[in-house]
Image 1 (cartoon, rainbow, N blue to C red):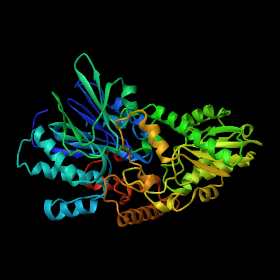
Image 2: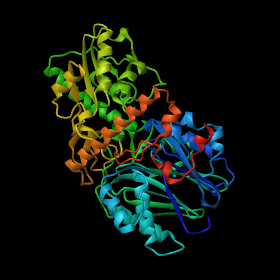
Image 3: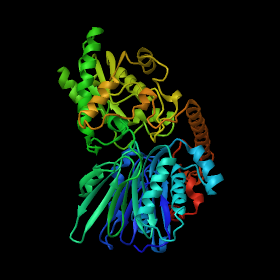
Image 4: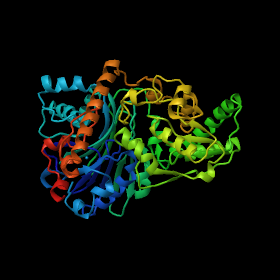
Length: 534
């Protein structure tokens, strides 16, 4: 790439070749970047395959932003899943590419952008704000041609200004691509290499499973506060932020990540095995105290299967698959709207009466968030004849919002907020609820990488590693979320009044929990090829 005056674009996911860059976001939670050495290789099919491997990280929407000849950016995005949006037609129209997470000092940064940097922010997207902070820092160099030192310095300055959690990939047209991770390493991103006869291909992704499936090796996590620059001819890495507490989000291991991924040197699968072993000891103690004998252990598909099997083996109890899952219905935790989640539980699972009738059942789940799914599942078990239903959770009670990029920001939505364990059991209809202790959960994960001494456990403790999360800030987030829910409800109602789904999706819903929102970046000026073809 010739070094020219830079144009910069932040988005969610990237693919880059010598001539073209393709990038795609998956609901703000997954990032993917691929640099192919061969300039004529067909990159689009591979990037879409990678996106499908990250689909578990979000289902609301997906998109691709590309950078074509002369630094022109193109995009294809829509509400829906990867398989629904990217067909041969949409992929063929993309020539090029581009972070995720949440900033928690957005108001302060917006004032800086307006009063000092004199930059207009078009949307409520943290990605756009992060981009403008970075671009402003580059502009301070006063150079027409920038070099790697300038980029590293600009990223370091941005990290000093921005508080929160983020893992980002960005492209500087005419220069190359960059990846960086917040100083606490809360959100994951790593990189791998695939050696070819003509040179090396490079991959950035939120999870290592993408590298495994695509034939990349030498997987290595981007370090907290580190930046990586890849150009046509070089790869450079530099620590650009001051040393801070390394605290990866423990909820990645509990629920969010795929079991076949490795994050920060920790196998998600093995960590869930360890969670099951630790939970078994807690269950044994509680059952003895309550003089209860369990007949069968049944997991709530899919995330809890690994832990449930280990728990059953340790307690020498029968393990059965009592719920059969319809795999064509998405994850209810990340589905928008409480009524939608409730309705989808029974569409998603079917209880086999044979495994429940006249039995004391121990259901093992990864966590209890809103309680909607748990309540429906417990009722399903009782409807088919379960004598008693006891629920064991691999995670402690979730009583506080996640402000670092996982969509559960409202305390009123959390069934454990302000409730005791007994009150939680009553709320979800269980005869007994048993929660993993936080020390046991942390040790289950830490045992696989002793160098990590701290995890972000804010959803359990209300202690936020970055600082700056005040009661006022949480109330602000909850207010935005309530507005968002009302807006979505109004738009959904329009569909039933003669407005088509496509027309509804055209209308931008500009709200913020610190995340980019679907539709809001249309005003930036990027043509959306999906709308042109649908």
